[in-house]
Image 1 (cartoon, helix red, strand yellow):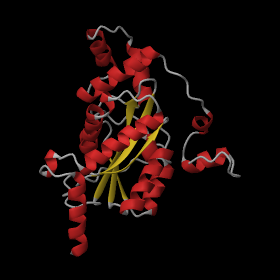
Image 2: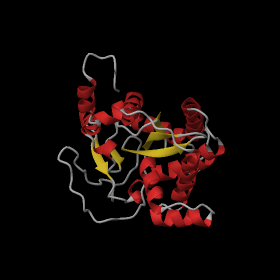
Image 3: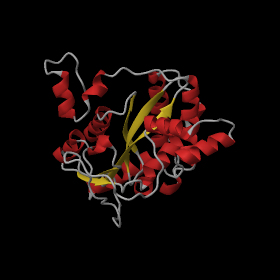
Image 4: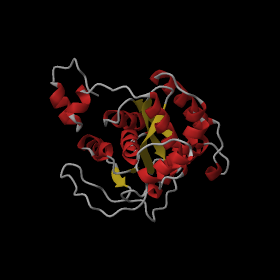
Length: 275
C-alpha cells in the first residue's frame, strides 16, 4: 500500500493508512536460530493450550529440556503477535481514533453465505524467519475467501485481503475481527464502512467469539505449515495457496456434513439468487 515512488510523501501515506511511520522505514532484523526454534515451539504450544501465558510457556519449554526466561518468552510472543487467551478486565482506555466495536454475533442465526465474514492474523514459522498470514473466512460456509502473506503485521496486507474478497464475492453484511490494532485502525474500519459493512469485534481475549477462524489456523498449521519448512516467503505463499485451494475445493468439512466449503458456499449462493 505504501508507494515509495509516489509524489505524496511517505509520512502522509502512512498517516492516511493509519500505520506508524517507523514501521515503513524500519529494516527487518535477523532472528537467531535459537529464537526461531523457540518461536516454533511456542506456536505449537499456543495452538494446543491457548490459555498459556509466558510463565506457563516457560515451564512447558523447561519440560521439553529448554531453559529460557519468562521475559524472553514474553518478547517472542509479542513479536509473534500472540497472547494468552482468557477474559481480562478492561483496564486500557480506548484511543479516540481506534474505537472498539461491539460483538454482534451473540444469538445471531447465521444461515447464508456473505452474512458474516471473519478475519484474523496468525504467525507462520519458516526454516529461517517467519511471515504473517491474514485470511478472510465466510462464517457460514467456512470458505477461505481471500488471504495475504506479509513479513510485517502492518494494516496494508489486511486491507488488500478485504479488498480482494469484496472484489470477488461482494461485501458481507458483517465483518467480525479481534481488537488488534490493524482491525481498529481508521484505514481498516473506513474501508468496511465505505462498503456498508457492519463491524463486529470479539471481546478482549475472548477467542471463542471467533472460534471458526481459530480452528482454521489449527488446520492450516498442522496439515500444511508444520509439514513443510518453507525456505522463502514466495515458498510460503505457494504452499499456503495450494493448501487453501485443497481446503476449499477438496477437503470435506465435518461441520458441513462432509461437504467442501466451496460446494456449500456456491450452492447456497445459487439458491439465494434463484429466490
